[in-house]
Image 1 (spheres, rainbow, N blue to C red):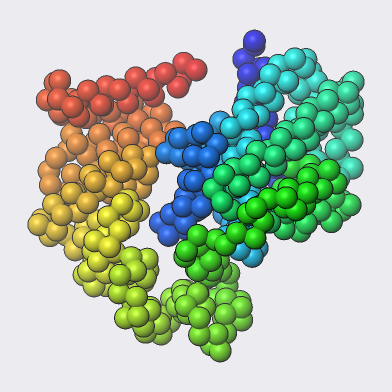
Image 2: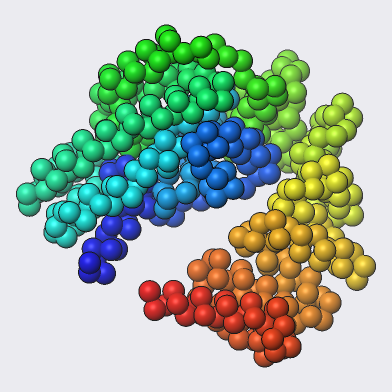
Length: 449
């Protein structure tokens, strides 16, 4: 196959199992990182992945900072969930329903099958489909999709779309099976489908991306309803703690992503629930009203002293307001309460580095080394590790850390330069020197590809 064909297939594949491209800014999507939200989603998903016969640790979960209701899989073992979906979900069961469906796509190998379908189409037809889809997304006009019909592509488009609908039905069937196998209800899946079903009559530009990328049919809705009528788990309760964790996740997203005034309208002072107080603490911090924010978060910590996420938030509040020493204490407590949270460890290390004292720099170095062992693809951690090594005069290791960061961010020239710098400074044959060679070779290989 020509490089053009491979490139076009990669372009469509990068959009997930759907044929219709996502919004035109999808290539520049921004991802958010948060230990609490990521751990919540991971706990929802892990039993479903296992039920599908997948290795939970092999599937990466990404949270996309986008207000649209959407979720998709891409590149094989990658699951993407929009913040818009999470915020608008009314229960953990709804999120689990979406994850179960997307797990059906992964386990069914639908993305690979889509690529096979694309290979059977001519390059000209694929190109017309891609350009037509991009034109429709960029223009915001549903009529722009008429480009897809030009040049004899309509038959191919219909064939692929029908295949996608078949995939959607298969993913629903698999998803309900996975939910039953872990003793959970498929009612959340039906609730999401019901919410979106009315959007099919809207102009394409006004539809949720989830509707555009996951064709809805009356048969799909009927299947899930019929399944619930016969499933012994139709009304199964959620696992302990899931309902509260969902409310906390939604409150946290509101707090960080809405304007503070909007958050305070959604969670007024009259609402004394824990999620509401959590959202208000974040809103006060972003106003900014640090005294009020600290009062709110300290009250939550006093009632929940073993909660790592309240301590982490307090550390963030203090650090971003120039109170690094107090911030390091809060982050330190969060790490002790949740040692398997690399993002929290990196936050703790940043506060220690800000104090610029050699013993604390060495403590920061240890935190960063453990964080990168847990999550070697967290680029910010490599940057902080480079700072720690540099402060301690370990210039070769600092160069190696910068090479790791550059490789992750796709800066191939920087990766080669820093890896060569590291090789020149590190003992020949040492683990760091060998890793620097690997990075240089990897950066060169991506150039060759």
